[in-house]
Image (cartoon, rainbow, N blue to C red):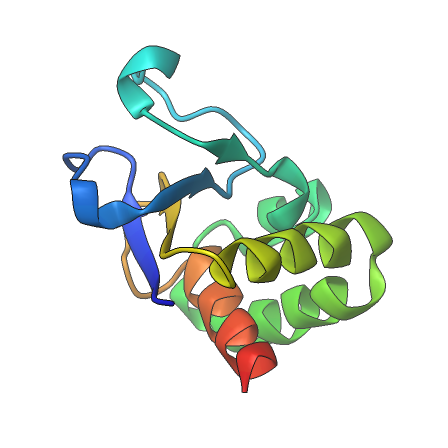
Length: 120
């Protein structure tokens, strides 16, 4: 099955498969009905402290990536959320939905890469 990423502000498509919001906070300006989500896994996102420290600062991204990967491995709720995504991927395509502006420097890139490494 395929793992995809998409901003919540992009149009929903049939090819999205199972749509999971992977942010701790609900995205601004989006109505829950319009989001067309199948799940909201808040615990799949970085801890609030790590998220606030990172603040989408490109210079902090490598350190953020290491710390978030550590959370994905050692923080039980975060690890369980990642496992839930992997289980869903056994049945269907999954789209990780997020609100961050930068499509390359955000937690979903780290989460996607982490999940793909776990699928091998």
